[in-house]
Length: 205
Image (cartoon, rainbow, N blue to C red; front, side, top):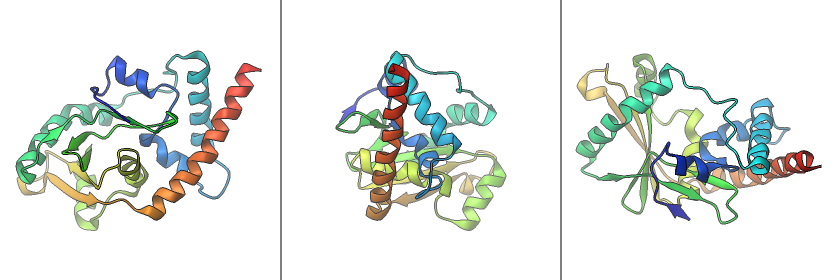
């Protein structure tokens, strides 16, 4: 299900409450096939606490310079993407699974079939993406989450760096659903949600 909502609003944060969201899928998929690592364990505890208290846990939240840069540059990246692709980007809103335990917020939707994920980066990161091509592995699970939960046919990964020459400021890589990755993601998330449920029971006991 999709909710028409602006990101980083109180309504958006409320929708995310107590859900495992795609921006955190990478930490859940780490050590796949083995026990969850510390980041995933702490994330499961955070979600469980939100479920029991119905309050947003901000104890581990922080903003650094890179995050602030991303928020400031994202509208510029969207505008340049629209000019280059002749597509209109609308708000990403919030998608959640049928059981309402998983959530997803792309940076924007393109029609009904596509979405975008934007990363505003510094020059050395942009250089690496231009030379290597493809999508940064750190975001592959987040993007598959967009495609899966949002039921999209494609997602354009956008890397934006205003310090680069004009013709290299925007890097776009289109990603399509990978059934094998989505199946692995689905299996791992089921295991993760059991971890969340166990923590909920512990808090209620």
